[in-house]
Length: 180
Image 1 (tube, rainbow, N blue to C red):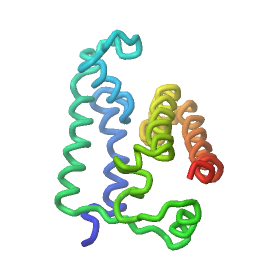
Image 2 (image 1 turned 180 degrees about the horizontal axis):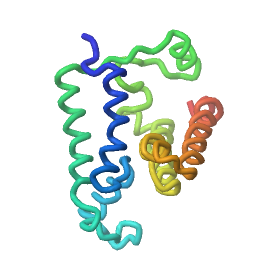
Image 3 (image 1 turned 45 degrees about the horizontal axis):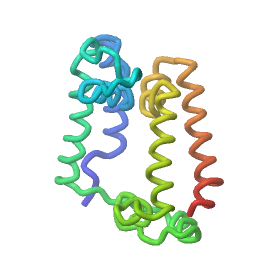
Image 4 (image 1 turned 90 degrees about the vertical axis):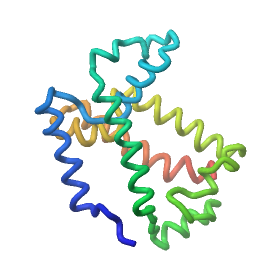
């Protein structure tokens, strides 16, 4: 079954989000700040980072994140996504120990049983912490900086995107082969 939203439709729709958000109140596009607002609303737990006034920002952040989850659930039901990986990538991953390619992410790395292994804990827990910390330290996530920040010609977003790509390349070619 073909994907319901080809790149030439999805890309411009994502691109239109930036001017729409700017027109309705100079809002930034991204996930990490929205997750911070959810944590502040649901469980501030005395941590200063989550102690800001999330109500001042407005409920649109919560609606945005809810829409991401609802939209993903709808698309997963209508047309379960399929992933096509090039034979060269499959060979490279098999050479470092990844053998199963039947879903959106390799089951060898991203499953409950894999999480209980040292390799799985490093990939999921340490990797998740690094992504969360990095997004917080960079003042936003990849989607926020790459889509919204670059569209606004923000120098900090340009530097952050360079850092994201450099970190991704470093992890792919130097760190992951040693972990796996």
